[in-house]
Length: 280
Image (cartoon, rainbow, N blue to C red):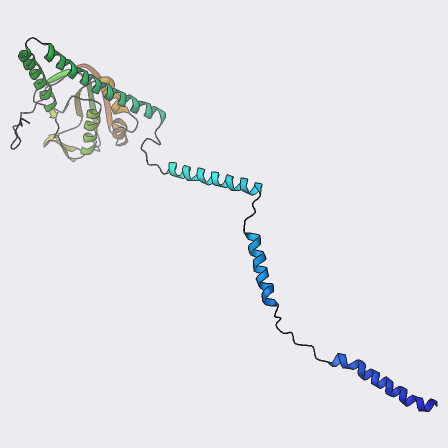
């Protein structure tokens, strides 16, 4: 009996081993595209979109954004102000005070001239002999224009300016700048080395061989200027002005105030070739 049962038991065990081996030898299934992958991807995008919009900003983020905006605005204003090319931006306080004083003096001169003209008009209106008064004012105006045109001698308070040029470094444009500075300060009559300076005066030549209106002049260059000394002298000595510019070229400039200076160099009166007085 026992021998008869052994084959069956071996067969059963063999079949059990074969049955247990089948799952191990079966090939792994090939993953196939799941039809539900598409809806999963779409739902992911929707979740991303829902997370970004509408934006959820906290109070701290708003404060940081506001501070950054204010900082950027301040930097833009600072850059714009630094790019300003104003000539007065780098001036010192003393220079600004002197420039302001010059402007005040020019304003006062214009006010005085306006007042003088108003007084003349009042005199004409109130004078019993208006024709005689008009003649006197015309003669006075002619004298004033003669001084400005250089056709008559003049005297009055003013300054003298002496420029020494031992190295011949003073150029024609430096003398022209000096004339322009004096005119801007209210000079009424100017004479340089015996030559009367008028509206059409020009300078030419090189250092050491300068000419005024074609007439040769030599150093030292002596200016006689009639005007208000309190305005003329500071205009020449202003920082970066005429005196400092000449000193940089190894020249020296001496300015002195004079109570009564005489400018006696005159120019002949020229008749215009084409211009005629108009009644209009």
